[in-house]
Amino acid sequence: MEFSVNAQRVDPYKNFKFRVKWDGRYVAGVMKVGALKRTTEMVEHRVGGDPSTVRKSPGQTKYEAITLERGVTHDPEFEQWVNKVWNFGAGLGSFARIC
Image (cartoon, rainbow, N blue to C red):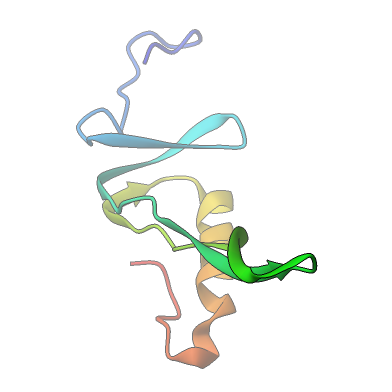
């Protein structure tokens, strides 16, 4: 990444495997990203004219949470947003801060 204002500036995220882009700018670097997973339920139903045949249609799709591990950010606005999201499930036994 080159900086137009100060070409000598050091990119604090260049040594990480992944850079996190948020709101159009790079705000964090992480070493590991969890897999993207989704599951779609299959809903069985019968058509009125043919009650002996079961048909399947896609139902609700669920997306699992991703994890960002071993990272760093120098952006206070991004860190505040992460802490809001992280605290959302705090009553359910989740961690209550960014690590």
